[in-house]
Image (tube, rainbow, N blue to C red; front, side, top):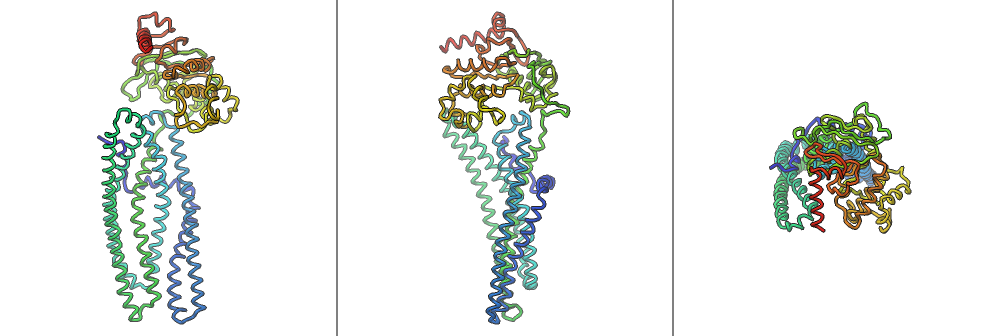
Length: 593
């Protein structure tokens, strides 16, 4: 069985197309990047000037006992050290700032695209995975710029600069000490090959661990209810152990690589001591030059280690960029047409004209469905689970488009309207009310600052939400816990009514909006619902037939087709599906009471 997060292992080590796309986000900041490169070059120049100053001071004023000259070289050395620190600070600040700006642009583009994607995309992709794309994967691209591309350039410049200084100091000694360099690069290449496999295994297993952890925490209530704690713990232990084993293998590879590299560099130092010592003894090498060369040899090892480390950053970034750009390349299934116009104020007529629809392109959900709602009238739709009721709402709100036929408002196809302006004219109240972090008022106005406080208060009062809001510690300013955990089901429902009323939609859609309220507030719910529906075109989906008895018309949908329609009284009088559903619910209510 394929794990849902096995795509963590996908991707090549380096993909020029992906890198090219990423660099397009870098291009607007070219001037700042050039400045960073200049600062980096200045830093390296100051850093490598220090040993040169030391060399000249030892072989000059120190040998000749020239104290003023020695003091002067000491000042030069301090200036070089200060310059190194200053340019390092400016370089780090510049690259970090540019990196954050690049990631800000990319993250904003990704989130904006996610908002445009159709509901079908979110049906196919788990929320946890998308959060990782917007956070972790984007952060990997930030690491690619700051610690990858720029630092890689810094390492190369440092490497070539050090080699140049070594040759300048003593070219024969440079050839001797660099004789081990091919072995260092060979060890680095071998390590890269081994680390690649270990690194990918570790990513897959940490992704599986995170996936199971997210699932377990989200479903903790169910786990505890059915007493499955031990079974879940064992499954978590297995995944945790797999991750430990893969991480241990990766650590083992690093544990071999770094000591091996240190041994090779120690060999170069040994050659330096042997050959350089002979040069000092026979007078062909000064002590100052020897000390400067010693410093350059140690500086030579640092960029080689860093370049090897950049491989992991590059690999992670390539995998992350592939996933991020896959989302950005995902087409919007339901998009505005080029000739779409803003939706005008609506009269509220709704029509489904011979509508066919299928989610997978194979299994029909709606078949040749046609009905019409007059402006200001109410239509209820009932049927068993899977009959197609919620699909009707999805089409009306243009979360999906019909396969055949058309959905119309005021006689015009929905596809003629701009999606955003169309949805602003519609109101949707769901059974599962989603509340956002913020205050009660924030959850009514949803960031709409054109509403004054009086409009929010009037909406709450009209649907009876003011009764429970008045009991809250800070009223409308009370903070709502995650998903409204501190509010009852009925209170959350009243809050959703107030939200819909504040936006004053001409067409109102209620999807099971009263199917799970507590008995204490049921009358408040019904009164609020009556206020909300008054004067509006209303499409109501309901399982509880008692809540839609006063609808102007009721459609009974079965397997995507309209089987019966009429008023409550007319349908009860018929010996059909509605009458059977009604009798079953009355019998269930009597048994419960």
